[in-house]
Length: 219
Image 1: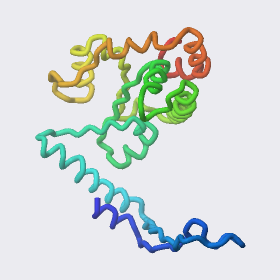
Image 2: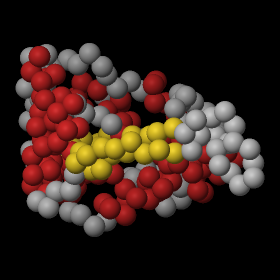
Image 3: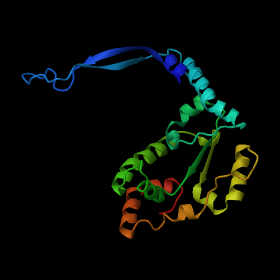
Image 4: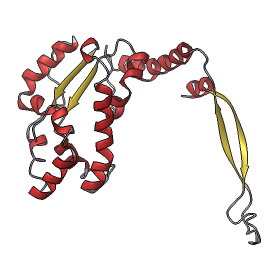
């Protein structure tokens, strides 16, 4: 990471800023001394190819090295929001295949309200997720994914018959089938179906009225 930082940064300097209570009109300055913050000036790349080459080396070092250490020929990075920057990911790693494992949007909302890293209310989860769905669907309408290294599959289908669905998925990816340590299990998805009462579910469905069918699901 140190090498990557040095390749992306042009220079740094310390900016002096007033401390709390320092120099505000007639308010007496308190005991707080001025502070400094490190400012970073990013490097400008007139040739985008140079930036991409630097980032490819970083990916090879961080992920390729870990895969090699584990004796694996292929690496997988599963950050969900990668879905919103697929154009850049294909530019960065042209040989990459993106696997989009989707789930019914209502159960996605139900799952989010139970996570410590997500909004704890239905309103909050919808305020977070609806723009993500809208952005993804707007982008999807502009690109021909059939011409890309892209696979889309429902989590519910994977869970219904994991061994067979896994075999089919791995065949699409050009990967030899094997019994994976992690599996998709129906009970780990189905338990969300009754999480909301009728009124709450109807509210979620109304809010996502255009999203649910666009993601390939019935309300």
